[in-house]
Amino acid sequence: MSDGRQKGSLIIPIFIPNQGCPNRCVYCKQETITDQWNQPVHAINIKRILDGAIKSNRFDTSSRPEVAFYGGTFTRLSKRRMVELLEAVAPYIRKGFFKSIRVSTRPDELDMERLDLMGRFGVSTIELGAQSMDDEVLELTKRGHTRQDTIESVHLLKGNGFRVGIQLMPGLPGDSEERFMKTVEEVMELHPDMVRLYPTIIIRGTELHRWYKEKRYQPLQLEEAVKICQEACVRLENEGIPVIRIGLMSSPSLLKEGQIVAGPWHRAFGFLVRSGIHQKRIEPYLPKPDNAKKIKLRAPHREIPLVRGYKNRGLRLIEEKTGAKVIGVLPDESLPSGQIGVELIS
Image (cartoon, rainbow, N blue to C red):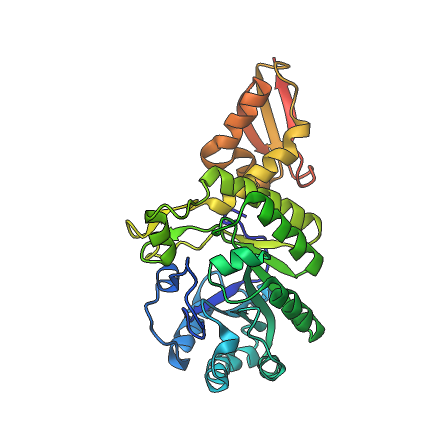
């Protein structure tokens, strides 16, 4: 969980940056985010990516691996182009290397003809770049679709047997914590199968970068974004909706000096969110202040990093709350998830 994703199927991404997109949103520079610069993806590229994935030590068919087309508006491609991309994956599905395909698209670019086409090629999940459920925010960011488009698209996809993902972006122009939580509540009512959270950052060369220089836009601070994503995660997952990613991936292009101009960027953003949530869960098990000078903690092995926090900040927070020095964190598989054991040492 260190990257903010819940454990699930292995996803092999194939990026088609901006392909099929009818316009460029104010925050978007997919070439930098995906490390691909207007290079059309063809069958030979897909074969190279998938062959490389299969040879990787991480590849395991028991993890129900999927191929994912990200970075563009897949369902706005021509049908001929869609078939070209899907046909390149088809042999790998027939041979059992991959279970299915997922694609990302806009909420206003779905029709039954394309849904039928994707279904025949093994597409099982469609992720919608909704970003917000606030029409004013969507208009300001030049998304070109409405909240109603998202509502109708989710119903259409669910009604035709597709699993649905929704991508959200806290911190967009015109947004606020209150507005974003209203977006989260509306998404919860739609009951998608998964959600991704991508806090808005300012990338060099985007329209949002110009607005920032003109003082027309102020991004979230890191602490604000972490707090908002923690609350969103808790609300969504309490409703049984997994948050499968928090924060943008770290591509080489994105990490080049000067590419990220401002905003709540952190290499371990997802871990900051998850460890913060975990700290709140274990708080009831901590001793009252000044009950001991030292304490030893026990936790399930896989949750020890969440207890420690980023660069041991979690342990320092525990020390502040208890007034006791943490002298160790030991694995204890007898404890249920979300709990810790505490040994008081006077």
